[in-house]
Image (cartoon, rainbow, N blue to C red):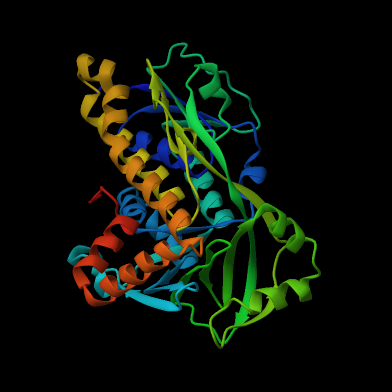
Length: 379
């Protein structure tokens, strides 16, 4: 196999995992980030990991490093407050191959994930990593330059790749909260008129709460005293769940829809949020980015000794990834549009949807397939 030389700009979860994946198949990787390793690890956030990401982490020998630091959940409770309906999904609603894990998904802290990935970067021989370094986007002597530098990618702008972008009227307030009398194996997605409210179990009665609402309401809530904010949270939590302590300062971030018109320009390639970023409802963001990693790594592995495929690889990557990305874009945007309203015709559609899902295991299985594996089956 030809040892391709690849530059990656951005060492967040997507860029780091891509570097590890490419090094595993024999590529020589240079990865740059303008932040220090400490800055990269300090973000206050948690991720929902689905089966596509789980399978990729296993494939890259990373799961064993993470499994004791990650919390699994085997039940997802979806509540529609507008129609007073509830749907319980469990691991038996998954496909047969996915049931073996006993989990619908897993929750991991950003800091834990990044420290593990950075340690792997620094101990993998085919990877040269430079933190606190602003790399240019020139191809120089590299076979490919890959941008993993997020929704505001400067390298994407350097190559003049345009996209569709708009800001949702909703923002998200998020924080880790200690909740008594809770079940650490159940995650919740509560669909409310002001926006979805996610409850992600991290173990030991600690939860990452992601509260979507108008930007104004989020900004008003973040300046509340912690006791007042806990009181507001308690009115939304499931019966019996008692919020006790806010464990870290809440933050507010804006929700954007972004989709690049192309994921490449010649030998320059976009991955992760440099190519696409959608509303966080359903926790699809990181998993979608990591499916980019898997697809691109597999294509590079297949193409390494074929000049024709190497030349056309960026275009093939774009064609392969586009259906999955469009499906997630449509699904997440539809959830926000349909469930964040009290419009009467949409309430009828929601009642019908919940009724059909409660009666049909096949529909529940299809729904979880989209949420946990999308169009990929990584083995």
